[in-house]
Length: 145
Image 1 (cartoon, rainbow, N blue to C red):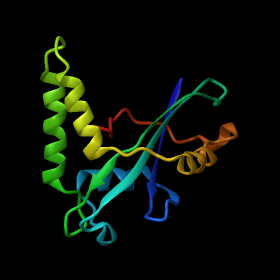
Image 2 (cartoon, rainbow, N blue to C red; image 1 turned 180 degrees about the vertical axis):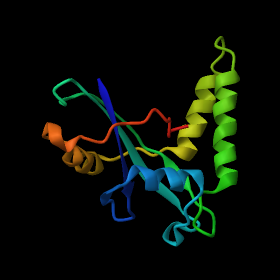
Image 3 (cartoon, rainbow, N blue to C red; image 1 turned 135 degrees about the vertical axis):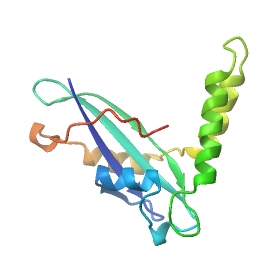
């Protein structure tokens, strides 16, 4: 089965726009300055598609990261540190208590967003409807931290 990653930006008018994966990776790494994003929390969508041998979608998973940018338009490293701290607290929590669920909920509240139906419909329209439309293989880097 082949994996394909697609990345999208959701603007302030709820319009979904596909962005190249390398561009998205540079944004997340803080290597790219986007002055339009300065001081903002920006909505993105990461769509992973699993394609069968005939390149037909067998499964799909969508994440909705809320990425914070500093005043210069780079990824806010302090916010990223806070998110990673919550991830570590979640992972290190005892499975007997409900602390991991609490840390996950706190992380999702600050660093994820819920897509309304009209945005989900736009993302659905971006799905490849023909096998040749899904030709970019997914490299196994986890972008959702």
